[in-house]
Length: 306
Image (cartoon, rainbow, N blue to C red; front, side, top):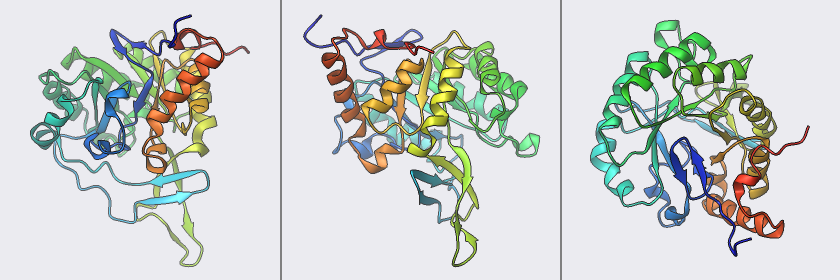
């Protein structure tokens, strides 16, 4: 085998130098981590979710630490697509890894408009569609829990872009495989999962919710077993690549997702605990392959024996 194992993986027609990506909303617009991480070592960077207009997010408190994880109700605060292009893009253009923009909207049309804007930006490699957002036209029900709505919004985005299209799934559904199939049928190139689990925490002294929003999204190690099960289910159901997300802190965590069938992984909450979690995981993956005499990371993908 070669001296150094091969960590390259392919997502659709795009090749990554390794399977380690950043999860949207946990890595800012990358520049925030520039002094802490060698950004050029990453497989890919997914920036904080963007909407058409700037969004202030929810009132504080909006982050709460829980046993084995974190609850957040940030409310998708972001600078908006116009400010992103004006103030964030120049730095991202200097980086070697592919850059993906995560998008969300409260109406289906907003997804299409965002995709059109991003299609025109040459330095952006792809779009990740966040379908865990409330659809205001459907009484606040999240796009991602209704198979028909999933197909419709993904199809709308697909018609507006030729870039690599990732669809990020909500775990707050009855049948995750059915949702994934609808995203694939609508034109997704890749499926990423899972987004956060709906959850809450209570202050027993005040008898009030710890989050101002009452309910938030649970992430971190506590959700890893759920995420792993869902990734395994979806990887067996669709023909397109799957990205695993949920509680990945170490190379061992990442390896579990790859063995379950994920082609790549995203690191999220771990970035708050250890800003160098991404590069530590890359180092750990390489060490595991060397130790086990495995020539390429792709030899591990989907090798779960059941």
